[in-house]
Length: 339
Ligand code: ATP
Ligand code: MG
Image 1 (cartoon, protein in one colour):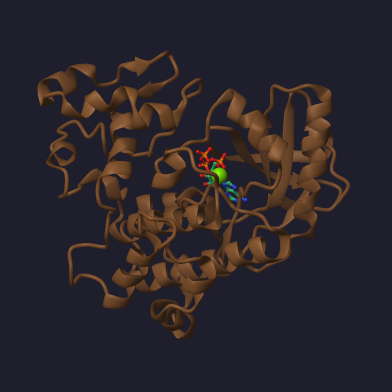
Image 2: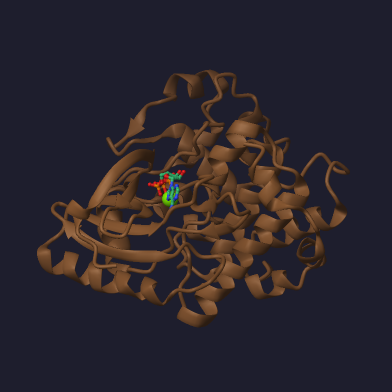
């Protein structure tokens, strides 16, 4: 497709994220329905062009588990990325609508994400960097695909300058400033799978830390897991400065709620959540016995806090639970017709 903004008719707003908005559009010359992501980039023309060049790699990404790419263009001051439209939306929206997702379907999600990650890494040496339910999409043919992976180094940098894409799906080592590896994606996958199976973000009721589960207003169990604002070095904050936050009494803590640090939009509660990820045991698929043993073990293998011990996507594709998911005969198309 030769994409021009004036050929794209907006049909519907699909959602808004931290980085911009996504619209359902029709490419009028071809009649093709697409999803158009509009990313506001505050960067020099040379940098924008570089980003556009880097995004072209997506033209070479062909996998049943990766959203197809139709093209990208500049529409000052934005960059528009046109991609395959997935008519059932993202898994966060789906579980918020229908409640916890059946564990056998979660197994199919795990399989699809691992296939997608392995494709991206083996064929293109791309690390996804942003695995979470809102970046796993479904369509009414029963396909599950991942989107929003980090193809463009320049885009990652530009976005980082305006708002940091740090989220609570981040691995402990990333929070502490270690570079991204495929194993950071595996951690994010583990957190996402628990979220889908439980129907809620897993750090919202941790039995290992009464401090966190005792949060009456639910500030620590946000509907939408928080991201971190600009201007803060996460690793320094988590490892040093704000440590004392943990020691404050409940009363003090409540008082400090919603107070944003350095105007960056980072509140104490988000900080505590990140500290929790670094300092406390990883979440698990609980209560014990509710889910198949293999599913529990799979999630544990994703959530080893030590990245050396954590499994790689390749290892995980050979896991017993994934073997089972492969041969599982659930009709995903029928499932998607229920919502
Ligand atoms: P964040 O900005 O924190 O990463 P996000 O992933 O929700 O959050 P966006 O990537 O901007 O933000 O997407 C916004 C919403 O648009 C998503 O939650 C998803 O439901 C919807 N969406 C994104 N891409 C598509 C697509 N290709 N087809 C259908 N819906 C989509
Ligand atoms: Mg997204």
